[in-house]
Image 1: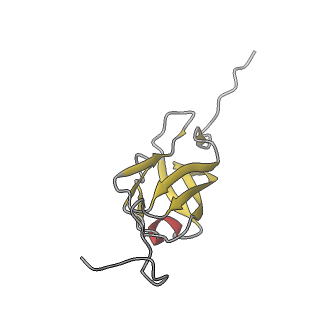
Image 2: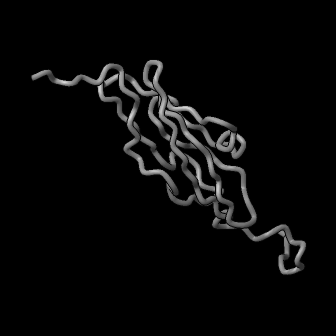
Length: 121
């Protein structure tokens, strides 16, 4: 009766794929934390693959903690950021797709072009 051992198995995401939630584009600090584990307890590193959606919105993915943080670029309408993250342990990787809904700043009043805003201090 042999026991089966995973030899250098790939990381396993514990954060479900899909939407992580929404953030107002004037929010700062830590927004979400993605988590993957490794069956052998190896250290996981996190990266965005196939693009720079997060960094393009001035968001940072912490490669060791999985925390997504920053002050995202302001948007004037709801914007869905879709991206793929990769969990790496040793030479093994596991990718998962996520999204974040970026909403206009909670104090967003527009640019005045509709004539409804008096920008006089």
